[in-house]
Length: 76
Image (cartoon, helix red, strand yellow):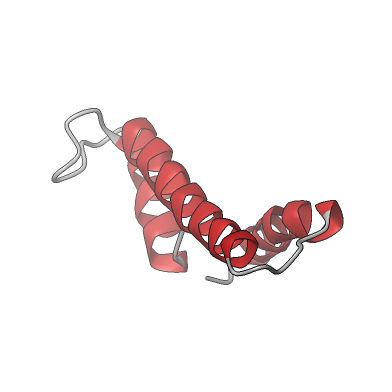
């Protein structure tokens, strides 16, 4: 999720406001962003696999760890 997207969702949760284009509110928006990000990461791993590149488990999980570290620092 982008830094801006994270700020929007966090503000909506803190203030209890509804989010435009997300009928379920900020929690549904966060779930959507997380699933959308997972979809892209899955596409990357599948493309590598189908093109004959073996991706070890450390790299597969490392993709998520990298995202987690950036999220903690507030970097998109």
